[in-house]
Image 1 (cartoon, one colour):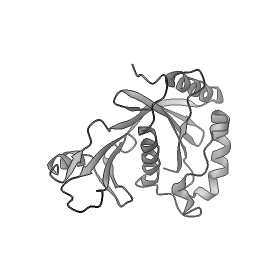
Image 2: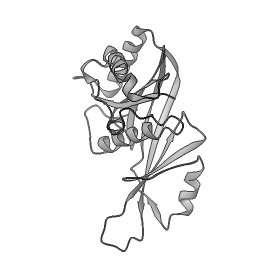
Image 3: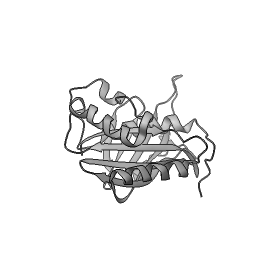
Image 4: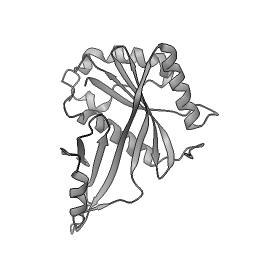
Length: 211
């Protein structure tokens, strides 16, 4: 796993979410990208219960990524994070006296996976309660683990199919521009998905119904 950028792509004017996703697929295929199956990233939200202090309780996010099917990630709001077995969800059920699942708050991004040379691209529809909230694009540059060494190359590649929607350097890298990306546990990638999911939770956009 190399340096990965996750960003939101706006819905094209006059188009639905699905039509915009189809346009992105077409642009990638015109570049020569080859479809390699599908992917899914999801996030469940839990509230800490029994908090007697006046301080609001922290949220706990449990996330899964089809790229790492044997593990999941548990991130506390503001940190820390825990990499756990895939059956961590079963443990959360047993901990319901401490953590309550926020019903109706599950968010997922699901879509197609493409390979183009050293790049892995995933275009997903972000849904919540069967309603499309937006479009996510994940771009991974596989040969490199130092964001500062490959960001300009990644940005140039993303411009080829995203045009003006190319993101700035993700905030997760800002504090460590010369530091190593976290490849083994994909914490940096999932942190970016969590930021995107939390942003899209609050939005409702036109043409959002999912069949």
